[in-house]
Image (cartoon, rainbow, N blue to C red; front, side, top):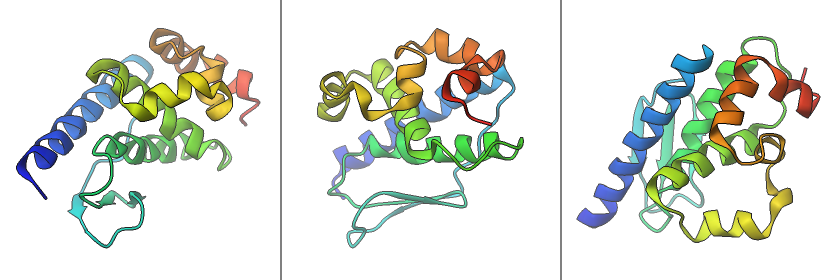
Length: 146
């Protein structure tokens, strides 16, 4: 993995953790910590499993935001929510990270495909609305997520 890829991956990891910490402080919803980041050239797609992110140097480094978003989704599920909206929630976390870092090709794709994430649609792609919706649970109501 080239140094600039490593730097981008580290920058996105740090920005995602900062975002997740902001969400935790504002709403009380925590996130699962990143235990291991494995750069694996044979990884077919970026994955999250029990605190471990596996990603290929060929993948967009910002995909780590999506994978770390799964850790927050898991913590929300631990409060009794059904296993639902995992991909939508992870995409919302990536969206908000990309808003902070500047949009990538992926982020611009969501502008074209608004149906891509029910979570983003429920908060109108607005981070403050997302935060308040988590805090007062209106996001869950809007999604009919029990």
